Every structure is written in structure tokens, then in C-alpha cells.
Length: 624
Image (cartoon, rainbow, N blue to C red; front, side, top):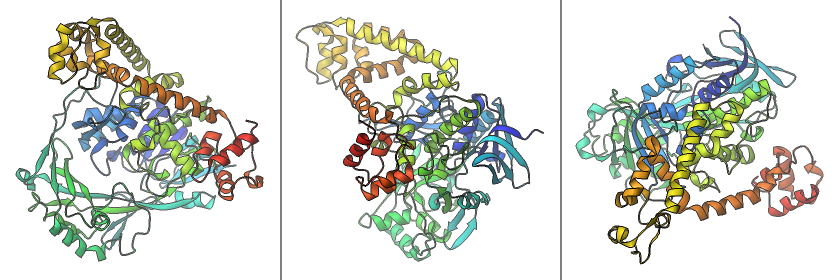
């Protein structure tokens, strides 16, 4: 057996699977190392993909030729488009997944991707020669050579599980932790620290009293994650259910706080602000007498349910007593209690935007080892790391995404420029150009770029060209076709919209906020006929056209702002200035600029603590 590869990916979680399939699909001989081939792309926490801003990341992964969107659609058991009441910049797809089918679909992909091989083992050491990574050594004693290595070890690096005072070494429940890599990387100068995350209990659905809960059903329209028309949501849809904690629940939780690792000093690492444990909630929001809980199904044929909102590391006895005080869960039986887990991560400011480390050539980090949380953030990083690992092996321009191109670009720029002081989670508020980064047009933004580097395949660009053509046809029809008052006024009256006095173009009516193209088509036979002629993607096209027309002014203004600020991204300053000698810069600026060594003036301007006057000084030094 030949143990020589172009790319070795350590860890088969969401980052690892995207990294491995990306590099392999681009032509690199790739090895994916995992501790357990039965848990490829395991959904360690909630059985869901997407959500606010996270859904946009998955759409971008798909547009680039990644796999998460395809797998999510094939395993979806409930789909919802969040934030519909807000503008299209905020619309975010989210899907509950059948956890077991999710793993099966990913396993099918990695097992059948050309150039991709799998080895079940644990990486314990990197082989480094003259500041270049050249391979790895495993726990079984196997030595493997590679031109590039991508580390996507998730929560396994010195992972420690907490349930009350009980501590268990592990990267996930019933799975061993990984040792050796952190210690080695720390010894050669990498900065590392500890973070914490947690997961709720899993309960037996047969013991839930659903009659006492509020049902939350999904949506069955055309929306999905993958832009590929052949990918369908095929599983029967399931409901989620809502209930609430109460004062009795909170009293029980309070009684166990002295045994909580979070409050007795047992856990000292940083936890996620945006996904707090139930014990953190009752302390931080002490005035609240209840907290909402979502009961989420784990699969079509599984009786396992996930209690979203009840993450905890309290003793298992306290968890059982507390959950059985909740309405509808009085007789609930647990499959397993919730737990917290501590693990090692590396300061992401030690990375370039390609996710290659600054200290060791051809070594890439992606996922939770960079201080992020979430499957989607991990998948986006893995994809970029895998692409650039392939490029490092075979040549080509580095592949990075800018902040006005993708949420993945915002994510990586935030990480490598600002670092993290808590597990990083993506939100729409983190993106200053979110109207340009909508979920509906990720293919328009990214697919052709990906095709150019050899990842996205021709079928994707063919579908994109077809979609663009149909958009143009519909826009031309709307702008060239007139409508008379007598044809539309009764409809406008029903919609509480001002009636027409004179005829107008249909596109003028589309601009009105009271209705959209789909509703308008029901009142205008010619428009309905036109939309139906667009065939399989008619609804997707009509929605995207509506967004383009209604928000054209705002979109154009945001583009102009992005283009102005983009000029700073083209002024290269990396390795051109000895910041320690520039006395006109503030002390904080000198220290941070020297540590991060930004690529461009634009990146420098986003470093926390760098003031506009500091940026002006840099511009003067560069002759601008």
C-alpha cells in the first residue's frame, strides 16, 4: 500500500469532509483519516443545518461545489426559511436532518469520490522538515507522506467531557480524545488555549406527551439548500414541538449549581455566548420565569429527540429531575444526559486567509480548532482549506473570498484578523454587505469562480447560465409589458394598494411592497403564462427577479460602497513595514500590526484597536 499523498486531512467531521472532497475533486490524491468510519460527518450536537447566516454559508458551500447542501437536502425532515418577515438579506434556510441518513449520504460521497482514500486511525504527530509539513505519524505507528496536511480535529484535541463532577477523556460521548498534536504544535511556537461547548440531553420520543406541546410544522415550497435541480428533498417531513421551562424547573436547576462544572471552578475555558447552557440562562436572565425549548426529531425511524435550549453539564440526576418538571415531559425517559466538553483550539490570527498556518508551510487548520462553533462554519472553512491545499500541491493562485463576496469570506477574515475570545458563530450582523450576500444568489456570486479553479463542474455552470437567461427573459417581459387599470385595479384594491389611473409597466407594480410576483401572476394571466414557461426553476427565478427589482437601488448603493472600500484591499503591506519602529503609530497599533502582519491596508483597518489615524499613517507610508 502506497502511503504517499498530495493532501492528508485529519478528522472526518464537517470541515474534514468538505476539505477532503474538495481537494480530491480538484485532482489531488487525498487521504481522510478518521477514528471511526461509522461516524463520518457525525452531527455531534443538534440534528440541523442552517439558520440565521449559517444557511447562507451552506448555500455558498453548494455554489462552490461543496457537498453539505446536497447531503442536507437528501436527509431533510423539516425545512424552514427563517426571517421571512424581514428583507431578503435576512432570509436564512434551516433544515432538520435525519442524523443517520446524513452520515450515510456523506459516507457514500467520501467512499465514491475519485482520488479520495480513507484510513481509520488517529494522527498523533506531524512530520515537519525545515518549517514545511511533509506528512504524519499515527497511533498505529504508520508513517504517511503528504505535500499538504489539513487539521480538522474538532473537539478531539485533549477533549474532556463534564457531567457534574464526573470527568471523562473524550472528543465526543463514547469516543476517545486525541493527544500529541497540540503538545507538538505548542512546542514549536503555536499559541493554543481551551474552549468549551455543550450539548443537551437526548430523550425517548415515546415518553413525550405531545398533546401538551405546541406543534411547529415545516414548509413544503421550492426552497432547498442545493442549487442543483436534480437534488430533491425526498424524506417525509416531521414536526418540531415547543414547550417551556417554569419556576419549578429553575428551582431544581439552582439546587444543583454547586455541582455544575461551570460554576464550581471545574471548567475554566471559554464557552459560547450565543448558545448558553440552561444553567447559564437561569443566572444571566434571573428575571425570566421560563425559557423556550424546541423538541427536534433525530430521524424518520428514530425515537431519539433533541431538546434544543436545554444544554447542560449538571449532574445527570439534576438534569432528569429538571426536565421532568417541564410541561409535556413529566414522564420522559432519557437516552443520555447532556454534557459539556473542553478542547484545544489555536489562535486563528496565526493563519493566512487561505487557512494555511504562518509558522509551518503547507499546514492548514479548519473548523473548531480555529475557535469556531457550528457545522456550517466548519464546512465553509474546510472547503477553503481543501481548495488551497490542492493549489499548494499543484500550483495556481491562492483562493480567498472577500467580505463582499461571501459570508465565508467574512468568517475567515474575522478569524484571521480579529481572533476569537469565545467560540465564533456567524450572524447576518457580522456582514456589512449582507444585501449582496443573500441566500438566493450565492450561485451568481461564486459558481463561476469555483469552475475556473476546477472544483465546480460543468453541470453547475450550465444550470447557472440557464438561470441567468431565464431571469433576463422575465425581467425584459416585466419591463416591456404594459397593463391597464381595468385589468389590475380589483387586485390592487384587495391588496390595499393604490389603484392605477393610467396604464403602467408590470415591473412598476412589482416594486410595490404589498405583494410579490407570484401573487401578481394570479391576477395577470400573461405573467402567469410567462413564469410557467420557465419550466423547472420558475419559482426560484421569479423570486430572484423580484428581489433584484424591489431592492435594485439598495443593492447598487451597497456595491458602490464595497467598491470604494475594496481599494484598500489592493494595497499590499505584508512584510513591507517594520511596525515596531513607526513611532507615529499608537503602541497598541504597533503591537497588533507586528503580531498579525496583515496582508493589506484593508485587513489592517479591521484589526481591533487600529484607529483611522493609524490607517492614514500606513497609507502615507505606502505613498498613498
